[in-house]
Length: 488
Image: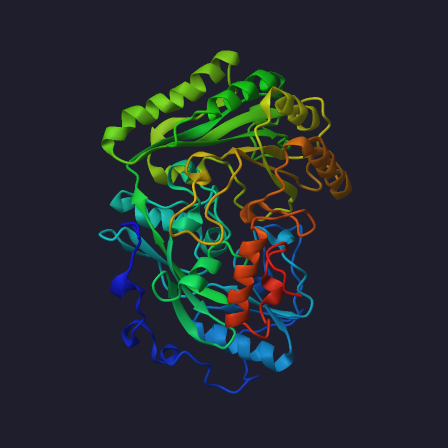
């Protein structure tokens, strides 16, 4: 067992850790008792409980409820059992289009009471389900610690972590799922379980990347890591310079230091007040990311690594925007320029092999200048480094065996019609087929219909065995990601 795995008393749930209502681990009220706040379509509270960040696919369950306590979750499970409804779970709905239809379901929106608790000695944070990454990053920052958060501060913690999680720290620390140390889970029988490597290793393995369908997570505990400063920012050029820039970026990624994790995107930003004119004058190519300095002694190296990337790119052409700087880790939350308000996005995702110069040309032919692409964003996330290394205590998904993650999407009404965006997504997928590995990472999947696969057949079978143990009646079966189960 590696030294950074938290074990011992922290993994044991005692009566002191739970409220009296939680201690016995079982639902006590009769099935079908009234659930506070449950709403049907058209009733007060329904829109709030079903709200999603990606407006392209709003869910329409038979009923929905916001759960703030463990007893709220248990009451919802009892109600679903009494009415013969399947059970679904979400928080922010950033990947709403990737979810299965919810017509005959009770949707539980987790917004659990309590705040983030940081233990700076153990370098661990306990996070209630429903918390967004911006809150966690800011809670850890005063202690000189960071967490493998997503690129957007508004993304919910639980779905991101248990779906793998690609962070701008990832090439140094690996998939975010590997940082999970314990999960508080209410299973279909109403039992509250504290799941960890020591308490239930099979369920702990399956929760981390196994595809969901195990129950309702109410809290999660993650390992933090030292982060004194980061060099982070975004540099953008007119897309006319994209061929030389993208080739130079790709060559740098081949042997880049693990402290650096970057992405490159072709952006077609609309002419709206929130977008600066130099970014909406036409397609632009942007390179963003971060270089981690864990200690003060690492700052000089972080500066040097950033310059090794950006110097040759700046020599190709003068940027129209250049914000890279040495700053505090919490500032990384703004680097990727993700939208802060809900938006409708129709997108696609693939894990790609090394494109080489030929692949770069093909990518730019379908998303670059002159392509007529209606995609508001299309690009590559740099993988490799710790992303590619299996974790000795990792879960069902503990590494990614590909050098790049492609993602692209459009916003109907801003960059084209929904039909035009969907057609162009298919065009890009066909063009990149020679480099498509056939694998995906769950947190990047934007469509229920797109091909997706992140587990081997053996891992799917192992996760299904665990699912059957904790949910033999299959109440959470529809909450499983497509491609992650063989259960009918």
